[in-house]
Figure (cartoon, rainbow, N blue to C red):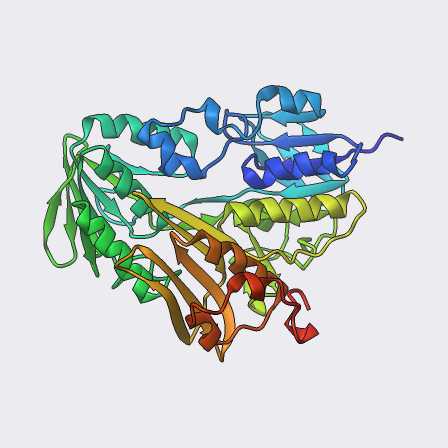
Length: 419
């Protein structure tokens, strides 16, 4: 009897990588990859950088050309939505009608933009960035707009602010919290990027909550803040985070919290259904808690882990998280998860624009953020992944070679990631 194979819902990085990795693992059964967008799978990171700047086009950001899916016998269904899962029968129902059967089901359904909840949010010229269609709209809008207000001082907001500034626009960033990127970096890093954007002419406003977006004739004209101040805008780009897409899982009775709940093998409460990428909440060996991560690395590594398990090589997910952002000519690379840190030490300095911040909790290294210090990032990833003990004194001492530490076996097995 022919096997139903694997159905993957979502054609982002996680969904694509699952399909590709299954074939790399030698998986011979059918693979169906289903995505709501009309495009073949593409990279999201360039959307807020090279694509909007005009340095990359839609074809150049494709994860693989169209022929890849045919060559690898991956049934790619674009512009299609899975509306329900029938777990007892192992069936998914699709919006265009009909049902598809599966042996394994992978939910790589991603996340959606968190919407700004103020009057005027529905005006033309208020835009978000997550999909290629949204990036195309922003790119076209930036050609005409002169005064840009970016709502949100996280990665996406600051990347778009940098791009708009490079394109010669007048840019204002309104961040509701007291500093930039407050949830993910130390104050020193926030201050660095505040100074960087200010030096390029971007107006940075922190502690600046938006109270209203005002327009005329259905088109945005200005943004009003909670303190009553007002900023002209013919384009408002909102980047205030994303919300995991959990409705499909919830509707089929699977547990959800801050994402679809999975175990260390990325399985949901139903052993035949997996969830990965931006939508999944999983137990992290690096934090000792359940987390949901929004990164290309996490999506791709989780996909590889699930593909191995489905192909018969059961594999727990233990990859070290890492992230990056490019703003102007500065690259920030982040390794590990810094949440809960109680102490930081640095290498380098802000003046040289080469700086690394090491995050500690109870003298245990949690994470490293590096600005234009790629070697610190590379060796730091090895140190964190291997659980090599590093003291704050060693981290702060430039004479201590991170390369040497990275090649050191951990002193205690309990420090090893995943144990």
